[in-house]
Image 1: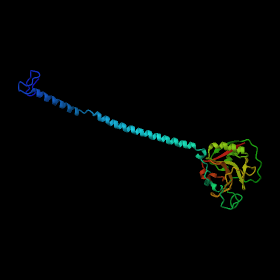
Image 2 (image 1 turned 45 degrees about the vertical axis):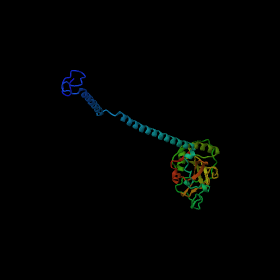
Image 3 (image 1 turned 60 degrees about the vertical axis):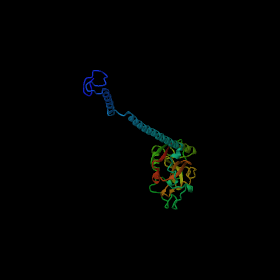
Image 4 (image 1 turned 90 degrees about the vertical axis):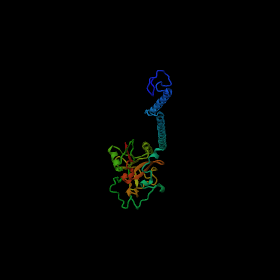
Length: 294
């Protein structure tokens, strides 16, 4: 080895002093070793190696936040699913009649008032056809009977229901064009048969039937357009206070008959104007009619 002070070659290993300059070699070696160690420490600090412990801590924080957000998302999703399921259960608990009422479900919708037994008194002292002059409206297409009604025909019928925003007269002509007529109820058995068929449609619709007015009496109308049978004014199927023959809220005569279903009272009759949809605008999309084929 060489002396770190004077550079003289030292022959003896482990010599404590340089034979050339007398330097303390042991002390020099100790200082040199410390310097090397300090240099290594400094190199380690500035070597650019990442601080793994800090990185792990940051990853744990981020992972905790993500886990919390996922847990919150699961809780919100479960709450929403529970709320939707509860709404569906509540809707299923309702009867069909509660879910969708007829346009007649509110008495004020069409000129009658259940609080007064269903009857609305006309403003005019009307007679015959429901107005002062006794004349029918110009646009009324319901035929006036000139002869006494005939006897009800013997029949074995089938029935078909249609849904279309027509006037009563248009529905009648459409049934006749197909070889039938608007349905008439000659027996309670027939009435029950048809209303049972209609019950599957709920309470939304109002249905035209084949009955028309002559003076202040309603009669059934057959496929030939003839009135027949006895007056049906006293039938137990009328809505309370009906027929009234006139609607004071719209000023329209009521010459035709429709049936509808209420949740608490079942199927009922009501007399209506020929152009029912215009008299009760909320009826659009809720009009049906039943054709009978003998």
